[in-house]
Length: 175
Image (tube, rainbow, N blue to C red; front, side, top):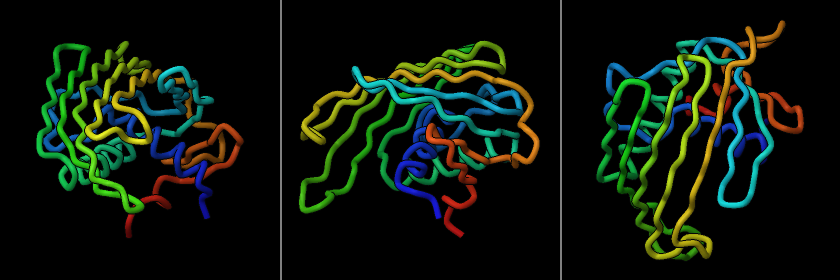
């Protein structure tokens, strides 16, 4: 059973790989080279340790579909534009009230630049109204790069968290 930290890392990687929650993905969306990827993020001043994931075209498509499903249920606006090696996205979403709090409106802007199919860099800004967890804005930087073919014994979708635990993304998907 996945732990909270491995699930959090997996969700972070889902968002990193898909860049944004998307409703209708452009056909010319850049693809990631199949194999082992290292991905890390920084939210504000806080850097997260890198995680690794074994990607192939079917896992990448599944990750986009999962993010699309989340987006279609939470977001009123989704706009994704592909300009060569750059993907620019803008969204307006509403996160339901949690733990007796209020619903939060989130407007987001993200720009991802791909270096071929072996690396990407994303910078995103989310604005919260009302504040979410004491913040009205969150800046996230995500970087990923291809490392090698997936190592022996790894299956597509295997995620290696910073603490070395492995969970397959299929375990996180509704059945």
